[in-house]
Image (cartoon, rainbow, N blue to C red; front, side, top):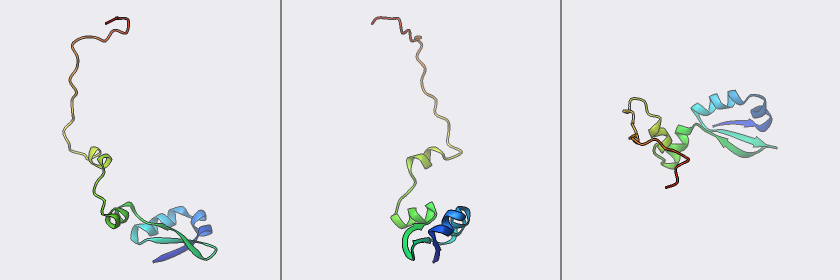
Length: 80
């Protein structure tokens, strides 16, 4: 478990993110743990989450979806 101060976190966020890929990073404020930084993968595993709809929609290799097109042009001046 890695522990860094909030000052260290503010000075080098990239380093904290790199460390969080390996293990959770505890961030302290005045010597007391206040936050935990972890990768999304670890968070999802911890909470039992599966892929979100955004993840599924972003999956490469899925066939493109074509929406049917209307044969009539939309006319905003038409009073139906």
